[in-house]
Image (tube, rainbow, N blue to C red; front, side, top):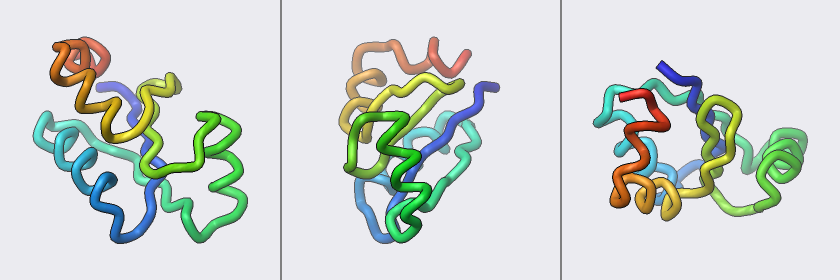
Length: 84
């Protein structure tokens, strides 16, 4: 199973949607609350180049946010990234 990291913000509907999609595939997500943690937010920005939530990484590769994750799912590419 791949290592999936997700930088999140409390009460973020996009974070909830992304986690739900991954959970439905049986994938464990390493949730990194970053909205109120300046260092984690800086880390997220340095790794992704983005400031919006969530930011998702699969095996260290940045795949984007919620919309990007769902685009991968629609195109049939997400399962391959997850090794499913």
